[in-house]
Image (cartoon, rainbow, N blue to C red):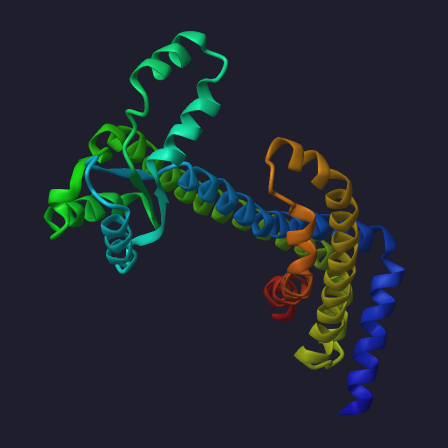
Length: 301
């Protein structure tokens, strides 16, 4: 058994090194295949970053009547934080609201003159972020029916509703498009790699037929091709890993300029172990499974 295994491994390595041209072509196709799978993994991180960025731009504000004390507002804030749909709540006092307003319009003399005449017309508020855009309606219903509703001057959900619904639609579309795009690329990659390995085995059909006629077992014939497929897959995984490490190292700073906070290289390094396992299993698994399927017809002699 051990002797047969050694012969199969040796034969598979000899086939791989002897047919160097075809082996390189197979590795090249599998590098493309594994690159697509790796790109899909990284595309998921980029998609989640973009979705999170959009969601962070959305919130609703609860404005309180002028006579409401800060203590009552803070107690209400505690109640709001207990709602499962609420991600976080920020209290903005009248003074803090005024400072933000001045900072925003400090270069507009008309607004500044008007503000100096009327004093501070701004109200204290709570800025509320939900975990999902679809949950703002639930939070608004709570605000409108809570025991603290008499303290509220207004909730701006209905003014912001078109923007919230638009962002919810965009994030939903991004998720669905990402899933569909991933499936299409994965299927195309597998088909290309499978047909390349099938072509490699087709070139050895006479050798397979001869071995079958002299009484070689199915597994003795199949074994070297499985080894050859596994070697090609492993080599392709290593090459892909090196390519992505180099490309992302130089590309990441440029992407971070366009998307502040997105460091794709750090994400790649942080998931390096998982990615490498995915690449090896994709490459070696694809090589072995494709070899098993493609060689079946040539064993029926």
